[in-house]
Length: 177
Image 1 (cartoon, helix red, strand yellow):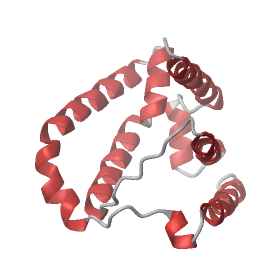
Image 2: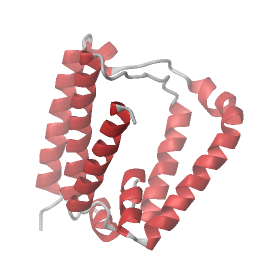
Image 3: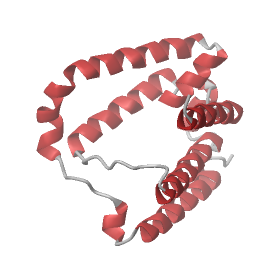
Image 4: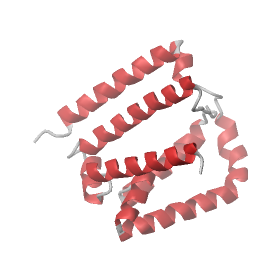
């Protein structure tokens, strides 16, 4: 196996361990986060996205990683977000936590995982039909924050500030009694 496969495998195992330890594989804890009762999981998710973005920038800068900016489509992205949220709300897991919870042996996660795989298979079959209907009419092209702010550094600084404020806000607002 290549070093990239090993790195991906080890990174995935490490991330699965962390999300399990944080409690993101527990649907009751996830529900408490969605009801804005407990802020630990949302803070973890923001931190994970922030660290992943920093890691991706580092891999890209070193020539090891590569980013692919896909075109932004308002309707397609809106529908995808709606379906993602409904699925998460119904089963209590996002795609990553579904795999980790299934690995723990949670049967509800196994069924959520099977449903996600079935949805993926269905989407693969109708993808070519949906592109002209949902994606193409509202395609805004490749939009990045770096384009908006004039540089990658400025965009990264804005993201760090927004994520830090969000993490602090969740701590102040969600966990009050």
